[in-house]
Amino acid sequence: MANTILIPTDFTIESLNVVKGALRQLDGEEVNLILVYSAHLSDCITDLLFFSKKKYLEDLQNEKFKEACEILLNKYASQINSFSIDLFTGNYQSTFHNFLLGNKVDAIFIPKSYKLKLGQKQSFDLLPYCRKSPVQCVEIDWNETRNVPEKDKVAELFFMPNPV
Image (cartoon, rainbow, N blue to C red; front, side, top):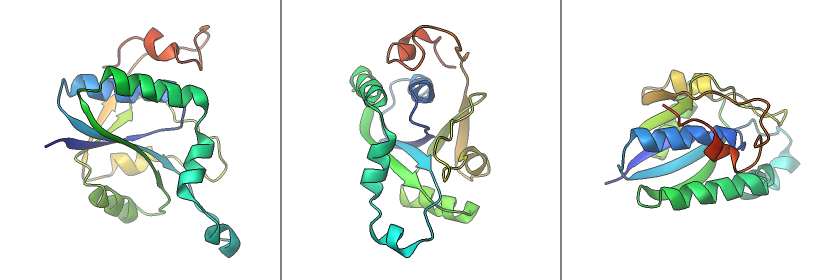
């Protein structure tokens, strides 16, 4: 049976290094992979009535990110049993714990030094919730690249040193 792992994302190619590092660390073990973005929902009843999680997440993803995900899915096809992207909208640690229980998460993999880029004003940092979680939380580290020609391109995923 495949373990379910959760990885916070900011929809940048660089953040996918956590996926790469987690899969390498799990060394051939089959996983159900959930990428999670965190944001607060509007309090406006009209916004909530017409809110679509699928559309919200789709709007956050650019073509480069989608292509990088496809490449990772192909490269690790024998290891990734299922892949999904989800949205966490809670305000409390207990809500996050229930989110983990509902998704049957066995482990969380987070970046050790990389800071998630919170582009939307309603987005928030999920890493403190992950660190306080009762679920095993594993930090993945890699050397960030700043001024390289591959920055924000799919090639960046392959240019970076292997995560540890």
